Image (cartoon, rainbow, N blue to C red; front, side, top):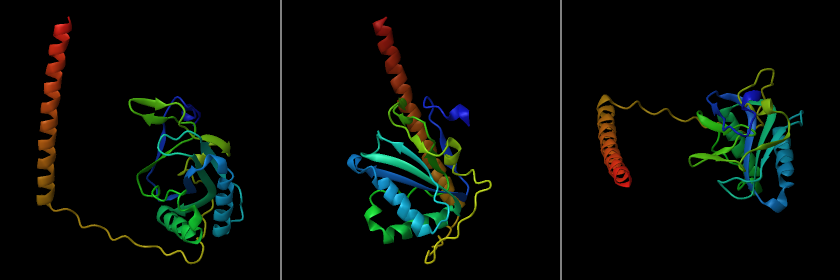
Length: 208
């Protein structure tokens, strides 16, 4: 993975598998409370009752999305993404003081997870100050779906898994109306784009 372990790029892992390493996205830690991250990690490991106390950790000092310090934490255990999210939600009911810091929206299928040493996309370019620097572990530790030879964790007792009912498939009539609206929207966009191009051409001719 050395070809993407480079801050001149912006590479994300697409989290499409259910089984993943256990990971946390921690945000908005005050700059003067940087030791709080180690308290969170310790309490989380104790809650999970893990025997291997190792972890991988990155830090981002310059997030454009929110203030304070940001961290990614990865533990050397595997959980299903649904069980993992519910485990973390349960952890936060017992440690409410961490509610403002742990992002619980990152466990769905299809989410993107930025790899270490990758600039943050910003506008038409990349923000060279906004990236996660490794302070513990290796680059490969942060490949969330690379779970070969990593043990599966037995969740703590009391984790309630809520099954989400699958939605009914949309009818052919609904899909037809949706496609018609999409086609109309695209036509309107192309019309506006054509008008802009004409105006730009007119302006360019005047300048020349």
